[in-house]
Length: 145
Ligand code: HEM
Image (cartoon, rainbow, N blue to C red):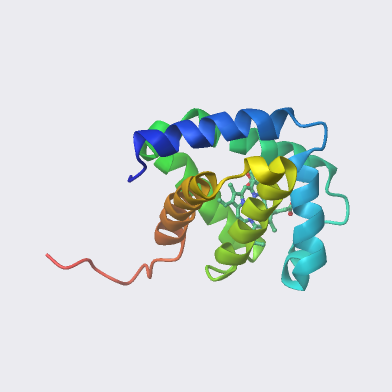
């Protein structure tokens, strides 16, 4: 997967600050997501306490492995297939990614430089791209020989 060494560093360093912030980014993220996107409100349970914790733990693992996202492919693939069962549609990934990255910006303020945004966009593109590719492929479709 295609992240530069510099982007790996930017993601790791910025996440250390984001995760250490007194404001829970995960809580803020879901607050914004559910407020801005009615489709998401309809998919999630009323009590988001567990989701807020588990999402942050997943992000921790993602960032720990950001230099080698390929190693997470089987995990991401399973996660994506569960998302199909939750009723998540492929096109919804883009809106969720934007809310997540905007939340990071809200936490870091001017410390969230354009380079850091681009690095996070690359991480989300790789991650969501792999999830969508593995979960929404047509099972009847045979790849070309
Ligand atoms: C990179 C993208 C995403 C990551 C890392 C992620 C992560 C997670 C995790 C860790 C869970 C806990 C349940 C499980 O492990 O199966 C979960 C559940 C869920 N996610 Fe995501 N998610 C992503 C994208 C999305 C998108 C695009 C949506 C669309 C709204 C979404 C909606 C949901 C829903 C509805 C649940 C189930 C909540 C419940 O019924 O308890 N997720 N997600």
